[in-house]
Length: 269
Image 1 (cartoon, rainbow, N blue to C red):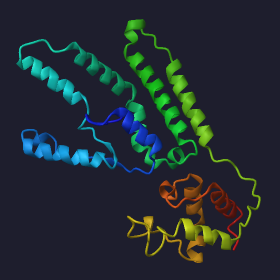
Image 2 (cartoon, rainbow, N blue to C red):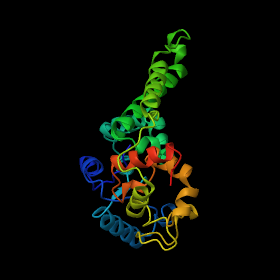
Image 3 (cartoon, rainbow, N blue to C red):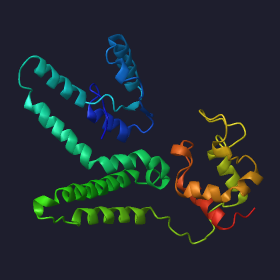
Image 4 (cartoon, rainbow, N blue to C red):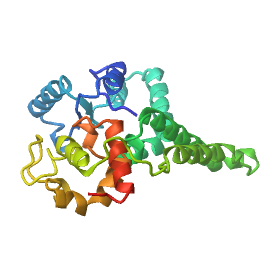
């Protein structure tokens, strides 16, 4: 599931993912198939990857252990001896992992489109639950393809368990209704102060946040009129925790509650 490369221990990558959230994640891309017979180019690519690994969490589908399995088998064949069976066992293990983690990996790839998942307070539990559901449903599909071994019968239990897990996750992530009460200091002046501190660095005519040369989606919140014109867009992004992006500006739960309550009260000003 984690494409870690041959020089980076799996435990190191997992540690970085869990305990170094400030470390940026990158997906490496470089020439592959047409440079295999160019040792100089390959050496430069390896040097580049090692340098990148020092500073980032890297995902590189071209740098996994299967390459070593293939190389060992090819070398044994050229030397006229039987390949080490451990490599075949390892290959079967990789194949099994790839089979059962197909759906979890697909979810992980598209999860940036669903802020309610990665923006949840306990997002790590959400990831574990959805991965477990994906494995369960994949288990059902694998068993279904081998139904002939059981007189055509396939237990629906794994699929049912996966669907129930997904339903539980959806229920847990469902936005909770608000009582409409007045949040402390929930005046428009207070909302403007929160927006100025947490949103304006990106959503202004001249963003000051590094990496932005223009406001995302052209959404400007740098005047009272613009804030009032986009309250519903703001509500969706704040409620799902999609914004601030990666909470880069450090908005607090109290500030989210204040803004959501103000919007639900009709955005008085």
